[in-house]
Image (cartoon, rainbow, N blue to C red; front, side, top):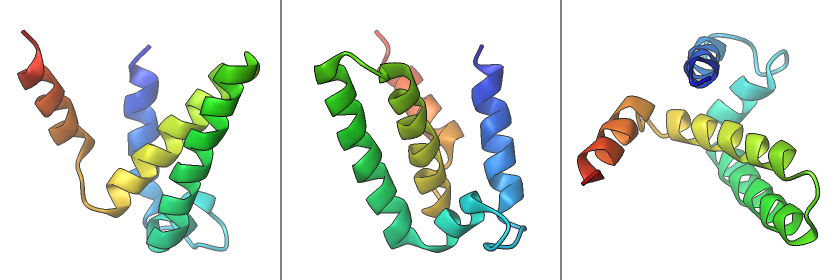
Length: 90
């Protein structure tokens, strides 16, 4: 199951080398203000979906994707985030 997240991260990193005209991910990676706006937008849509009990999974997937792109755009390694989460386990 979590292989999907690893594959997504690999694709996000590969898209850094593509054209912004060809890749939405590349466009987000290059435009940090767009990336942060999308994270905020998608979180709002997830909250609304939860409140309305509709499209929750779809909206959660959008949040995860946009958050992973935002992290990568800002040189925050997902591996470091996962290590931090592991360190917090009791």
